[in-house]
Image (cartoon, rainbow, N blue to C red; front, side, top):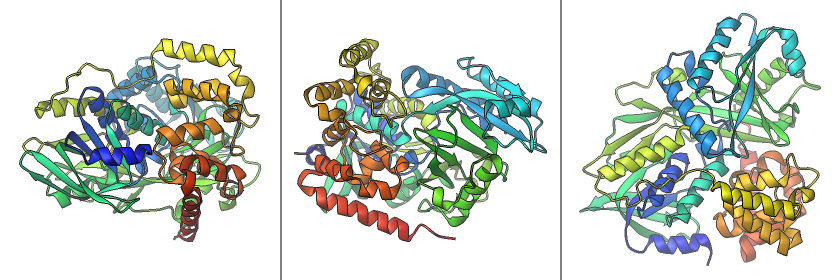
Length: 544
């Protein structure tokens, strides 16, 4: 029986302390924190885990430097402390990265003021990163030749944090951690009706894979549906103090623009932040900030052209970037928390990503609004405090539920990796050695990968050219990562679909082999399902 089938069966047996609706970052950390501390937890998502906002970010774990300009210093202080906490807890994943900002002539702030702001930002970060630096156009050009300095006053370099691999992988690891603590999680399970009778919530749900309908019972419910939080609350009759406004952000993935291991930061033509971000063998450029009325949105031709025009204007490139250079796209909706007293015309551009948790104590119902990856540990801790206040016992209330495995486990992993010369089998197309990469992705489970490679040398082979994923990683994913549809693996557990051009991926012999590993007798069906989804995406790609 597969992991998912086993969990679907367990969801129907008995009742839970807490049912979490939504498997994005807010739901994932809530599940990990509560399960580690002894609550009986169920989590479902109508799509895949991290299937929406949590898989379409800029992959940054930053302290909110953009909120300096609006004077939200308390928020910046909180986010910097959260960022530092992530750096300590996940040293292989959340790493300091230098950001090189180009200040154009005529910009609304003089360079010295921007530099002073980065110094203050460094102080908010308790000096845990390298000091900022200011430089003239010539030094800026020498440091990063790809920057177009023709209209540049100065450059400012400062530090923040970058999330290696991808945001969806980071989010899923909290889901996996929750399951390690006996939480029952399942993707592609949709809540169709939510009601409370007596002391228990009853969720009538649909398994979107099998069509089966069943009921999940729980003492408390956490609505962590991200952009869809308001809709679920409306359908279940919940009244809250907050609601969401939506801001669409997109990124385009292109071939690597620069070999420097830094993030290039600009102010786009509309005055907002614009990034050129390393992404393994590729580069991610963006983002946009466009108000939309609802979370069902996509990338328009105007969105693409905005990003391409800014990249071509701000960078010295060997050729002009066009839509033909786009390898993949990322499009997500940022749910911005506002009070119900604010109208639709709230100044959404200035709204921050701070989170709010609304609680109906009598109904034992929580709604999580807003939030971002940087603040995720705080969300998990707050949820635990609230749940305890609702008379739901957390017997292991001091249990640490986040962070990488103990240093002794890491030392054992390094020792085994050295003994078997793991780095010596790193594929030539890889952007880094295998030892750090496998630990970052899998933590203690990387030891299982080493054992598999020792017993089956073909586990150490690259399955899909230029994908930076070994056959053994696919084998591990098939057992531990609830891959229900092929896109779950290609787009979220990995970033293969983001770095391998679509035509190369579809034609890769290794793709069919990966399907065999992931889906066994359903391999052909699941591959056809994925190819059909690509056709549908292509049909809707070009909108005004």
